[in-house]
Amino acid sequence: MNTLSFNLDGYQVASLLSAFRERANIVLFWMQAAKTILSFVEPDPGQVHGRMIVCTGKMHRIFLESDGKVFSTALPFHVKTSDGFYSCTLRSGIDLSSKLTSEIIATLSSTESFQNFEILGFADDIMGVSDDPDTLWVALSELVNSDDGYLRFDHDPVRENGKLHPLNHIDIFFSQSATFKIGLAEKLEIDAFSDLLDVQTDCHYLSKD
Image (cartoon, rainbow, N blue to C red; front, side, top):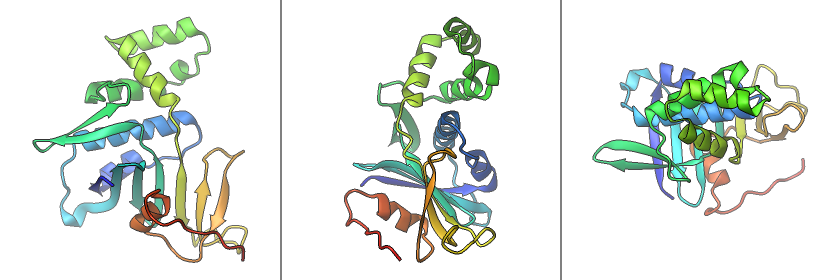
């Protein structure tokens, strides 16, 4: 498995952590992750507040850990390094440049744009954001239709409530109508969480208590 590990400072962690309530939130996270990778500079040891792991082998996922929480989504783009620089490319071959990621963030951050149910109105919004609206449209369509694969491990002593809300648990899915929890006997760190989801390591088993 090809793995890239990034130590994150407080600003980078804050830009990546947000509540996931709808598909747009996932795409925004992916774009912030791409921006972090493209401009990455290793923080001083005393400034490290989190860690991001990018897996680009058979398991194509991104993991983020901070403050006792670890979450993971599928990774809808390829990450490569060359001469000390990173590049991110969609499966369609589109380069996720800093400019394109900013355009996607601008489009999704505008309530009027993303909730414009008239196709011509949405097209006008995209043309107002980018000087290459065709590429923006193809990239945005690919991202919105990508499998998010969202899971989150939570160590939550504040809201612990027996078996209803276990101290250590995994939240699966992000929407209120679909999400559910699986309780865990112990706390998971980011490497153990990655191993849990790695299709090339031994499977873990659920045991009813």
